[in-house]
Image (cartoon, rainbow, N blue to C red; front, side, top):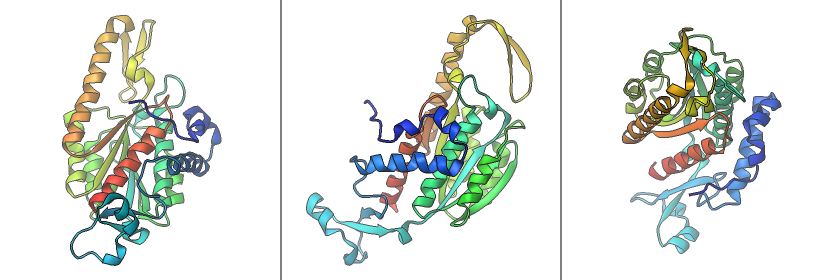
Length: 302
């Protein structure tokens, strides 16, 4: 199915975003343009500004039943107001050395910053409490979720640098100790590990009741290996130089990256973890669609 472009999508091109230079302005530009598009499109059954709806269950206050919605659907739905739906939203941002890679356009780290800033702005807009953890082979910075931490979250994203090798297992296991209260965890990474290793690292976060939304950020060259000339390639995590003849390796590499993505898609789906693959050459609207659709499903089952 062809995906419709929302009004405001012209602002979402990552090369244009990189020129803005201010994460709050960037996030506001992207999210408000995107939300304005949603308000003119049949995406949600109700405006996400006011509240969400959920199905009526025995014991609910009958005064909260939306009778207009009942007249249209012949089903009972209860209005949930912002005070009922506030939650903790934490951005878990991988700043390992491989995230500095860019074949053209912007590095994965910068693209991840844009995604994180948009998610933080959207959470704040919905009156959710927002925080952030950056990590590589260990936790680097930790800002707990709070209604007052939006600006600190953006500042943390803005200062993020990809300088050390990464390891998902150690920092994610430590994070599980921080999230005693259920919330939404938004994990942004290039996932430079085996799918089974990645899933084992994430399980502790999922099994304590958190909702996980995963953004897999890759550069276009990592997706299609569009190189032509023989040369040495550097492993950004280890610094090792590897001589490569692209033509002889291209088909094998593409098969391997497809298998990697398919394995992650399957494993995350089996554990009810929302997974979105992001190409740093593409606009951010897919990231926002994934988050908003997950948020809408979350509200239906609360």
